Length: 299
Image 1 (cartoon, one colour):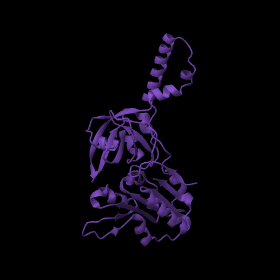
Image 2 (cartoon, helix red, strand yellow):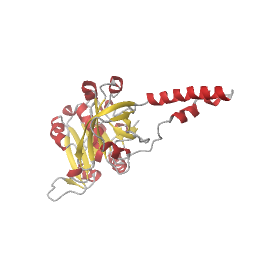
Image 3 (spheres, one colour):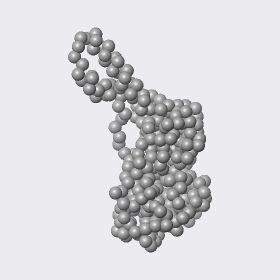
Image 4 (cartoon, helix red, strand yellow):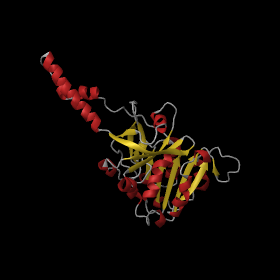
């Protein structure tokens, strides 16, 4: 998400991916198409069959599903829920926090890569995937955030290995878990916390969550719930409003001021969001003796 590292995160920093194969690009890659040597009429008939097969193959990669909820989660961030109850295999394929998928909207070729924000249990019980989506001008995400309830989007298969918390188990041997997220990178972290990883059986679980200000910080209504599960939430604002008395600056600076890692060999780390933040935190903790193998990354 050796070090578990996969891209993209959600949503704050976007890795570059190639577009899904069009029917014609699939046709060009099929061995049958390269070896066709016959008359023009038969060529046309066989090409039509192969093209139809390619279209079916492309269509099989995508599952249509309706939007069941779309609402503001914070400034420029939207909470989106998609009903996948009619696609139980797709819902069941989501098994671990940190996994993601591609999403297409009507009449737009380029998909968005989105980390799933809800825990796998929600997909199993209610047939729903939830996302935290940042609306960026000119992007597919902006079009998605402008859709209405009931409109249909298309979802790819669930991808990625997610966060393998087995690397920092059992809780008694890894009492410290440090979690870092920026912006909409909080999306898969929400899934991780609400899925559970024995936080209540660990002595020091901290979430450093960075945003520009409170207006841009999603999931504030969940902080008490997360705290009750054993996760201490440390909001960090880079441009706070007057009256803010919490941590300021960037996440890595706030952590450097606090640190307090008493047993590096018994510490696990989860990083999601801005690459620079993740790289600086990693360097800081490795220098203190935390194993790179215990750092689970999604950025």
